[in-house]
Length: 209
Image (cartoon, rainbow, N blue to C red):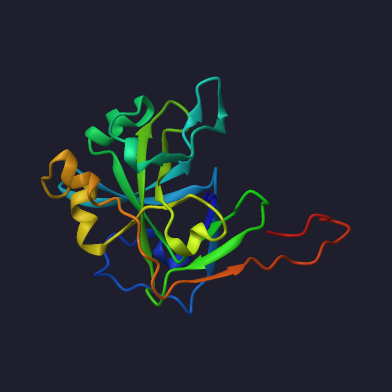
């Protein structure tokens, strides 16, 4: 399941696709579980979108330093105890990504690039906690045929641009209409390749990921 993806550094404050998104003349950053993600959300009080830093992974009830869980299944997000309240209350967010990684059971990372789009919007769910103050989990859907071949049975929920406002709660929608935003993308024109790792060194014998 996805535990790493990349984004451009300049995207940190982008809250709508109407703003320019850069790909080439920019710094690519890798974001992993426990990293602070820039989550786009709908501020119901101010009536505008905001970008809020949040840790990827809800804190474990017994140890806030451990991320547990890090994913939420789209099929049960509205009824699972850990996610239902946040989903119902509109604590839904979007994180921009350029690529995402998948690792099947053998642990070999594969980098998936979703076509020529400058960015994709990944669906996230967020909540407030004592520590960290904000944390989020990635929403997942069944894998498309490209990823099933790895094999893996899950992939990130990638939102159509036209579904952004509905997912965020910016536009009124029923529960079923919001859930309909979470669908498996077919993966047409996507590319997938094994992640290239740097050669091991004495200082870092496992290599750099």
